Image (cartoon, rainbow, N blue to C red):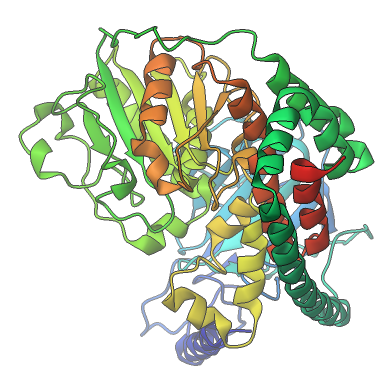
Length: 565
């Protein structure tokens, strides 16, 4: 446990103790007088201002199958509320009188949050249908919606801490045995010890790998002409067979085989270099979304020639991770932007979960659609910003007042990032959590879990999406930028670009083609084969560093690609 978590626990205990010792008024069982405090039998004193009492009832008649199990760490496994076994379309009701604070989708599922007069907030999650709207006042027992199967009920205090719902519910609850995932401290300790042994073994393997690599490079340099001949021969006629035979496991044969075969045979439809697509003539608005630790200036898009893409002053604004748009002196006199709030987000704001950031971006997109009806909104997202952009589009698309959207992502890990697991493990090491934040690593933050698994929603129907990836990106391997339902394009940038991809001429070419509804640019045979091989090697190098593969396998793969028979 990090010092921050210990300090947080000590402060929480101190605050609760102080409140219990000073409160002279408390509600009976089944009611709450102040956020999260248990009920007391002490009678109210006429000389003390009484806190409003709120009576709480179970939100459903379904059977409680999993009770409150607080996690041992901020993002560890557990259950922050009550889980009920309910049939599909089972009524879910408000636990007490209150006001709807949120009602809508988060991460592809429906949720409702209700605020109550005593400061508590109750959440109703994984619904099939919502019957209330934000701002609506509710009485106890009012129908909020209907369940989609298992239903989750949570209770939070004003500071956002989860408490056991049993502390405020008036009736005794019957738990039904059910197999659930849980964390065993002894098993976790044994697993960590085993992982440390593996990491040491991996380091020894890396040393051997480096030595073998030196010998391999030396042997190849003896005959440079032979290397060139082998490369040309394999790229032209043997790439598919050599790659499959030396690289993949048995269960990857079909997928990788199809990719290499497609690269060798060429794409069915592409745009030749001689085609120069015209700029769009309709009105368009650009919204840029930066990645982790991007400031309000959003530097990843500094090299993108937005004016050359046809935008003028007032057409481009930067999304703020605290909601609304980031400040821009050039937009102070633009009238239509005045209703949109201006906020200056911090680096910490960019490390929220993708779903939380997407809610704020979705609000901005809806507002732009209202202020500029008929305008096409083109969202440019870099790295994690691409995940936020697609998730926000999924929330906005399909509604009657949905604006016309186009999404362009650059070096975004839609397929997850294995290095994110390594950062999380690094943060768990004793004393390393504070160091990781000092040097700017996002260890232990909500967005890290999203980086590990990748995009949590499907590409919305009817929304064109372009996923651009740099062939030799060392931060996000291009294989991780593939996105089903989108146009995925790899480009050669002449270097190991990540943030720099946005401003390259190859990226600009693909942006122009995408905005004009043209197919991607045609590429040479050697480039198409490299689009398969290079990102795959980088991706497996990530897995070596993260302790997922033996270093010798990557060396064998490289030798097989360049000199295998």
